[in-house]
Length: 308
Ligand SMILES: [Zn+2]
Image (cartoon, rainbow, N blue to C red):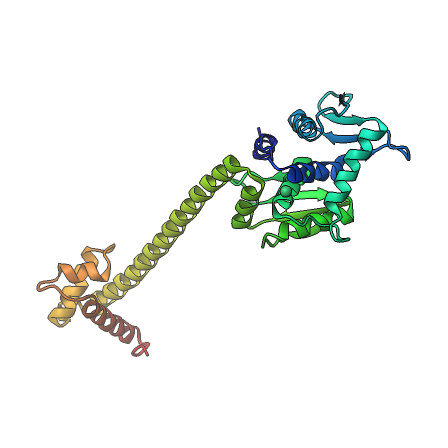
């Protein structure tokens, strides 16, 4: 099962206790994938491809309106690979009542947004149940809710961002996609919706990923350092061999001779390690000074003059 499906299934088990929030959540499902028949309002549908979401819709409706006449319809596609579950509210009176509650809930102070925080959370959850998806955090950090209705896209965007989040919006294939890409913000939204298991899994993956990245960074850094040390040592050995060929190492002053010999015998050692091998031991900067002198001597012998 995809991470997205796991998250959705978890959210189908989150049942808000307050009446206002139940209406808010249902209104999101209705607005995104609902249908109201004709002028005489004979039935009102909630559509979703997931039976678990349909079950939740039914539970919420029954909790709000105990004697509501309802019907559940399942329509499979010809290939039987996809299905559409419809929870239908039947009858003029029942339909009108549910519809009126949604309108009252949504149209606060002439605006289109939910006034109470608790209801806004429920609305986002409903919107995610209808049209949301979240990418497996192993791959990338991405959560989105999409709709072809501009008014709803703006409403969802505002509702999410009313919690201090910074969701973006972009068109894609005739839809408007409201998305979050920042891991911290996705975690905040999962928390707002009440997807606590998904949140924990997301965080676990994130911690492991961060750790892997850090280890990789360290390994790369270490490799780069080793490369640098080895390259520098190769240059030094070339200088020393040149001096040996032209004038002979025996001709060098004792301290330079000792460093040159140690370098030839320990091609992979760092300057600090060479210093520790000397008798008496010498600091890294002391070794470096002598290495530079050897370099200068080699340059002179090559006829290039002293290095600047
Ligand atoms: Zn509420």
